[in-house]
Length: 436
Image 1 (cartoon, rainbow, N blue to C red):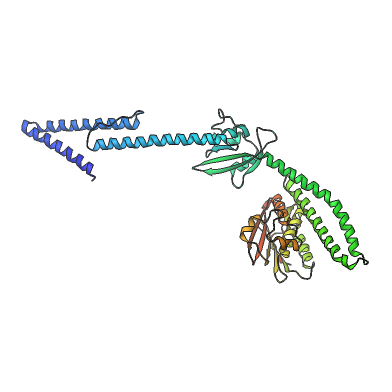
Image 2: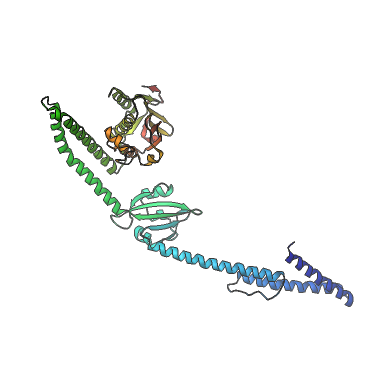
């Protein structure tokens, strides 16, 4: 038992013993004990009343200057209340500073509870989303922002967020991301990205227009260079320069063609069409074409584990398959192998290309699908690559509601896998298994 409690019990025992002794001396000991207990109860109630006022009262109640257990309890309660008041002041000061700082931000911030009801938002959100602090606190945010993409994203937030038009400001685009925090709370970060989108559109228009304008002069140059290269009277000193110019001209033509295809994929606002694409036939013809293209190339094998067809854009699907197989062959030595697989299950279908080539460093994989990004620029240019193939693949797969997955080990090889959703598949005769 703590010392202070032992002292209190000893004091009570001494008090009762004194009352009993007086009762024996003056008679009626029971009355003396009762009176002593009543006095002790009154003493205790007095301090309970003080404690209650200290815990519940709005003003500070100074403990009586006394000794013993109750003085210590009241002093501890007073200390706890003082700390609590200090913490409350600090919390309000921090909250005020946060509100002042968030009020100065150009990005909007909206705090939501577990039911997607608005708890708080800063002035930028008022301007960007058209919220009113007098009426919109406590309302569901999807009742105020009814854009379909936002409603879907709100149900399953994640990733990098979405871009939607502002519900208040005309011709303004907003990037919105929802981040969970705390307990059943989320914060929506809203940023004005109108300038970035306009710059991106300007860039796309410039590239598309430049590519279109450059095709005609390049076609003329290539035609003359072809004629010169086939001229038997061409001086020997000119044969190597003409051949190199023709090679570079053809490479420029391929780059322009890939750029225009990429611009088309990036600027398309809707998903790819749902035309019937016979994947098995397409892959069979493609692998035969690659197998007979050159004498020195890695062995190409095709395994068809399903006869499923895709619903999509045939040109874009062919571009996906062609670029991945061609890319694998370019970076795989003649002694290596390239495996192509088409499979399907309840989760959808997968097109997979596995090679035994040079592989990709792990730190380079996240950037490998960027336009003109090369792991080894010198090697890629020497082999005739445009640096746009994987960027085209990524955008084409996304337009077919698919996902591109990349796994690689440097020096051992790579695997590129395109996954397609079940609603993009047509099964003609059940699962099949074949090898080509």
